[in-house]
Length: 146
Image 1 (cartoon, helix red, strand yellow):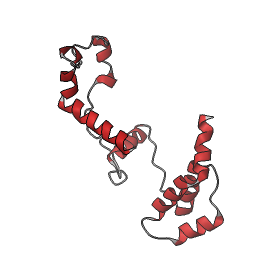
Image 2 (tube, helix red, strand yellow):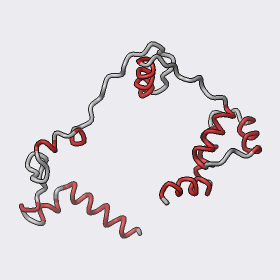
Image 3 (cartoon, helix red, strand yellow):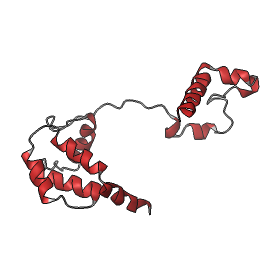
Image 4 (cartoon, helix red, strand yellow):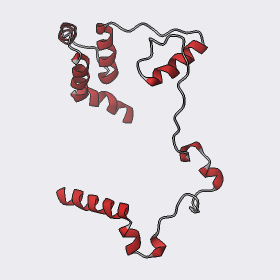
């Protein structure tokens, strides 16, 4: 495994430095998007070929609700339809939602009691980590692939 990783890293650095294309002659030079015969101009105009651009955040009425920049987009759509965000879920509901979502099972009573007794800021992250490490998580999500 170490040898494979070393070979891969060496190959990547040789390609980045342009050594490999030179070693195989001028015919091996990579073609840029403007000379690439594989895609037409119309295909290259597709959004997936365009570089990402930063979109300005929409203005929202309630500036206290957004916690992350993407929340502004969500709240703007809600405002446009005259909807309001739901209030934050209480801790027991949050635990129930994440447990059902990740494992498909309800939380055990001892897990509920333990989570509600833990007031630390990392409590929810620990629950999520525990659920992701659970075999129930793998079983739940493997269902979607079968």
